[in-house]
Length: 629
Image (cartoon, rainbow, N blue to C red; front, side, top):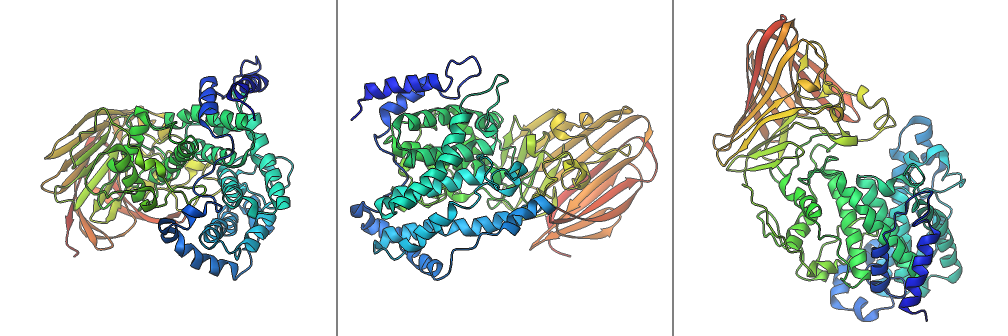
């Protein structure tokens, strides 16, 4: 058996081999972290959860109760063939730009595996093994990379392999299957899966650890600052720790992941706001927590990824971003109706020991914990037994949440039936041209305001044509058109927040929006926001001035229905909620309406167009909840 000293020496030699001090580029591996992992990791691979061979735990009442439903689901699964692979579905993206058909086909095919694995752990009768073994064999011939991430069809044609969101997560699921089932997987099938993991995960990540002379990695996500970082590192670390036989390699990968996961949090402002949107917080941050858990379990709780002030702020995001009834404001690429995953919120609340309202106990013990992590989804989170101590717990009114770095303000009425939110800043690579955009929320609905992010992504969503689409450019947002011009790309400009004040009675924000428009004759453009927590009203006012008379148009947006009661009054309805909008303007205006259907999102744009050019003026809109009329 190799001693720890021998492993340490081998690790230092290995790090030199991969370029720790190589002049060609810097290694992503942290030397001190690698030493720590060599000390704390077990001699053999260690995956999530409970191996089938551990009958003491698998036969326990807790385990059997947790997974008994899996047997019913697995019985239904094995009664049918494995969902088929379709070349036609995969290739559709390259022909039409439709990424969803191929992704859904892959999702159906992959989703059945872990259910059958856990059902076998419950029963231990071998009934599900033939289906599992056949699936493992077929998966080795599939493409694991999503079509939208497969440049030039390289992975599809097996001309080379790269790691993406799906391949990393699916590799983790395959590795978990091998770890859990152990010698129940025939040696020849295990060898075949391991060979594919080597081609698709181990070799690409080993190459990616050394940056080139320009500081680039062959796997760009290893050093990026958004959800790809946490998702892919989680999948890679989970795969490597679960099945890779070399402890030095496992320590080195865990070290690189822990070192470079810091880049993920660089994509968050200091206040923890998720610029990618709530759905991406659910996705990206849960993967980071998944990586926390796999490392926590593998090192028996000796290595903790959460003791960082920035990480704690990101944990608090899910608690602070909610308007009403757990609903998130649909700003930027945040999907309309998105909510922070409540289990994830409860987990963060418990781990931080906050005891905040509107949360429940996540778990009194590991076996009572809900399952929410991505990747290998069925995880027993033993780390809930080790809360993190916060030096300064957050102190914030229940009626207001202000993300000072992201410049996003959320206001709630005292009876928690009416809410609004406004943003001043952009959203990085998920930005819309929406400086000053807002949402109005009544009970569980958002009758008017920002239409939110795309319901689907298409080829053009993340391309040079991104801002030709109204749901992404300013045309589809409740922001003014100034001198006939719409907003510039929001992530390229920095509007100034002139004032932001919150209290238990009123919230107020004033934004200087001039930087968002290329209008040289504009001398003033301020949007003010005033929310009354008691009266349940919010007033949005645009105040403008030009050096010469110019056009001006105010804009309202709804994804519900609307009724114009009179010249100054609109009623916006969605679900069981209706909001009254009362308009006051400095000059006469005409009302225009436009139905928009973009990225599978239908909404109505209402323009308040001044009839004559003006030198200065204003548009004020006051929103308040009301009964349907």
